[in-house]
Image (cartoon, rainbow, N blue to C red; front, side, top):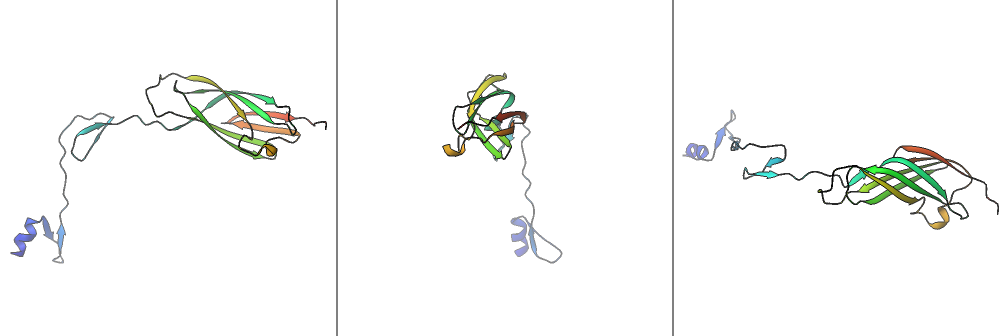
Length: 163
């Protein structure tokens, strides 16, 4: 009787006479699937939405450096570049300063919509260096600085200031 019970529950017996469950192999109906379809538990095809990263690197093509009339001198950048589509972006920047270097990562925040025109967009973005620093720490001491924005490199020089 126990044997009938084990067979009825889809169990088998291994060499140690212990019951082992047999793997259940699901069957899938033969649907024609394309690259934008995934199988769901009920074997229905569900279209996938395009995957768009929320952060897009701005491809920098040029930088204008503007010196503000402050003491110490603050620097504003006019960044010229491109984005891959015609969506309306917000921007996010990360600034890292070393004694003679400034490295900026500038990212466009892609909107949740994916129905933008798919052609390259040119942009001009203004960025005050040190904008996230307290005002007293935004300025630069006199010297030569290596500037890198998303891999685009240039230099700027802060001249000695008269008091």
